[in-house]
Length: 312
Image (cartoon, rainbow, N blue to C red):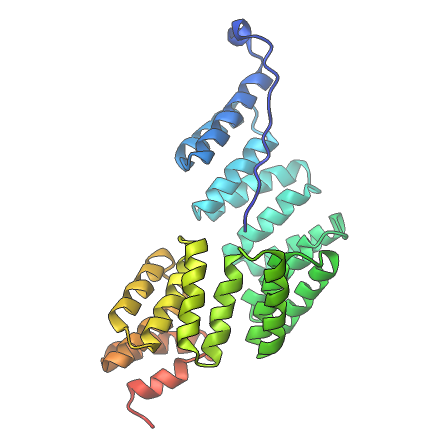
């Protein structure tokens, strides 16, 4: 999810007066320097400048919010939540901070706390789609797919041409087995924004369902061109390569994805599939049984457990 960082531009009266800057001027300049470093992908320096601004004013909302976003990007979620908590202590109705904290809590696995933020968000801004959308993401993580679909539908009513909502709703229809509905939603999303990589990723999964592995590979390759740093796409590409018989290239993609996200069960499953296809029973069972224990209904797990065990 992409977030726009608000820039606070201080009023600079004269270069000759820099030595007499007010605290307001100084903290504003630190904020700008932090934003510049963030635009240069120097997250550590950005955090340092935001912290300097907060040393002047520990309630400086823009510095707290921007630093939280950087911590979130670095997966330092507890620190991101701390900064957002500080904003909301002063202003509990700051809808951007409520939404962003909900996203961080979701990523941190604190689903019920995240749901609490969605309820607050819906009270603060009932006409916005964001509360329903975040609710859908949380229910999806909780494996409550019907509730997730209902939430995405509610979000879509508020923002009918929102590609992000359309793709997530299509994803729910895919999980619920409604492949034609999912495909139609992707068609609509593609007309609005053909450059959205998640459309191609989900199309590849729909092709997987119908065993069109070559088409799945074509779709995911296009998605990777659009978003070359998305680890989940490499995991999917790795699976399609396995199913097309290119085992070593498939494992390379899967290992890359696991390195980025070690707890991704889909990548762990795919590694189990690799070992099953290689005839390495012990390793295949280790990976596949781990996934079976944590997500008993995941697609392909039972099929490749049988292959690993040489069962018909």
